[in-house]
Length: 297
Image 1 (tube, rainbow, N blue to C red):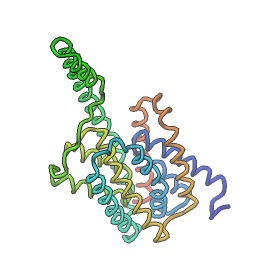
Image 2: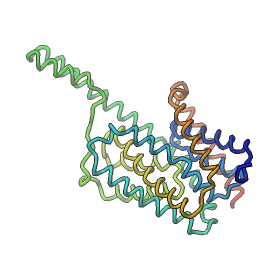
Image 3: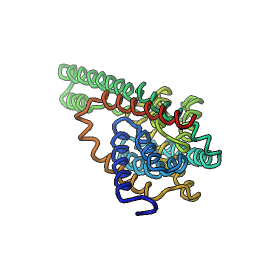
Image 4: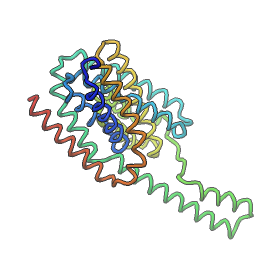
């Protein structure tokens, strides 16, 4: 036994972490797996949520490190989004810990249903499709300019046009922050606080806000939304640790599992249709919502 867990229980939490890391990579909803898994081992809802936040924090750090290219040239926005995420994470964490635990227990089914609906609507997939169409159109335009250059321009200019035609996807810039609509900042703050409080589906919500504001192309706003969640998860985790609200054996095994799941997910998900993975996540979320609602209400 380790702090109340048998070796088998810890291995099962590790397995749940692997599933959470896989689902997090595939459809962005790792908490739909990890949070109910911790509940199943008898961890109280608030403690389970706090431990879950600590357990999945490594996923966001890895995502930010892997998105350095997309974040290049966005220093001010990067600093601002991390700061907003960090402050929002503290607020969300304190709301979780200071409010009556019954508040979170009653809110959890609705929050899980909300994240399931976000996955079903799939704004991330729509944005990817829109960005792919824009990249294809831009590449076609560059190819046409290269063809025209062959007939009318000197050899040096032809080579430049051909290089432009081969450079795909097109590296579109992110708009300056002073052009952001006022409501973008309200949306980003809300996502940051939600990330610290619960977080399932927060990344997809951030994507939806940034896309609606036409901040920039998908691959860049996808990196930016990771900053908000990572900042929130790190500071929320610090609050939970200071307040002693973390079940460490569960959090550590979950963290290890999330790392493994995220690592093995890419080659596996290439062979599974995205719609099937999304449908499975939505069905699981709805079933979990009903189960928690029947136990809570």
